[in-house]
Length: 378
Image (cartoon, rainbow, N blue to C red; front, side):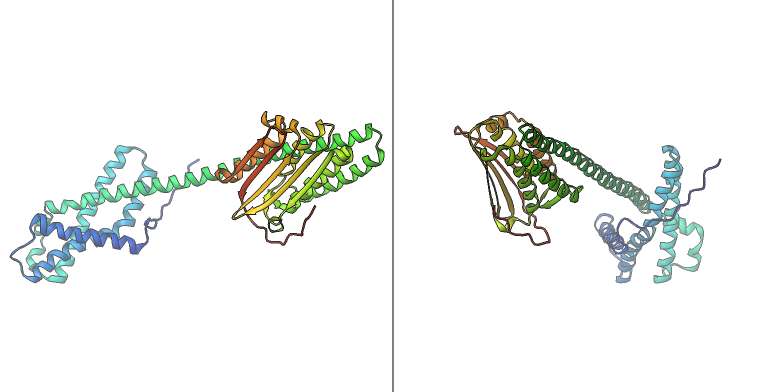
C-alpha cells in the first residue's frame, strides 16, 4: 500500500516579519559599508552614482528577506524527502545557483527601472551576464547562511520540545513517586490506629474500644473526603493528628499529654496532605508508648515571614534514639515527599539532647489557602 503523499506549506519565519526585514536591513547597511571601505566604492561617481551603489546593496538584502521563508521551507522539504546527504547537498547547490541568478536579475532590472542607467542595447543576455561578477557570489554565501540558520533554529526548537517533554515526564514521575510515598504512609498509619484499637480490646477496655472505633471511623471519613488531594489546609492536617492522638490517648491515658500551640495566622496555610500525622505517629509509637512515665508531645506552628515553621517536640528519649537511626516509615517517607515538592527551599531538621527531648522541625514556603480557616486552640 502506497503511503499518502506528503504536502508542505512554507512555514513562517522563526522570527516575526518585522524582525526579519530589520535584520536584513542591517545586513544591507553592512554590505554598503563593505562596498565603500573594502572594495572602494566609486570615488569619482556623482551623488546619483553613490545612491545607485547603496541602493543596489540594500536591494540585495531586501530580496533575501523576501526569500527567507522560501529557503526555510525548501530546507525542511529536502530534509524530509531526501535523507541522503549527497543528494541534499546537490539540490541545495542547484537552488543556491537558481536564487543567485533570479535574485540578481530582479536586482538589475529594478535598478534599471529606478535609475535608468542602462541603454536599450544593454538588455542583451551577454550584458546581464557580465554584471554577475565575483562580488555577486556573496549571494551563495547568504543562501548557505540561511540554510545554517534554519538548521540551528530547528535544532533549538527540537531541544525546547525535548526539554518540555522531559519536564513533563519528570513531573509525572514525581507525582507517581509522591503518590507511592503517600500510599506507603496511609496503610502504616491505619495499621497503627488498628493496633491501638486492638490493644484496647485485648485489655477488655470495651467502652474505650468503641470510642476509638468511632473516632477512627470519623478520621477515615475525613481522609476519604480529601483522598487524592495533594494539599490541604493546615487546620485540616491538625484535625487528622488530633484524631489519631485521641485514639492513642484512649489506650495510653495519662501517659500521653499533648499540646497544640498554633498561631491563627498560619491555620489557612496549604500543606501537603498527611505531612504532620506521620511525625506525630512516630513520636507516639517509638517514644511515649515505650515508656511507663507520662510523656508530653507538643506541636507548634507559626509563620516566619514568607515561610511556615512546624515543630513536633517529644520528651521521650526512646524516640530520640529511634529518630537517630531513621526508624519507622513516617519520617523517611515524609522527608522524601517534602524534598520532591519543595526542593532546596525545604528545611527538615531532627535534633535531640541528653535530656531525652527530641525535636523535628520543618520549614517550607508559606502558601495561603483561599478559604478562611477556623480558629484552633488546643
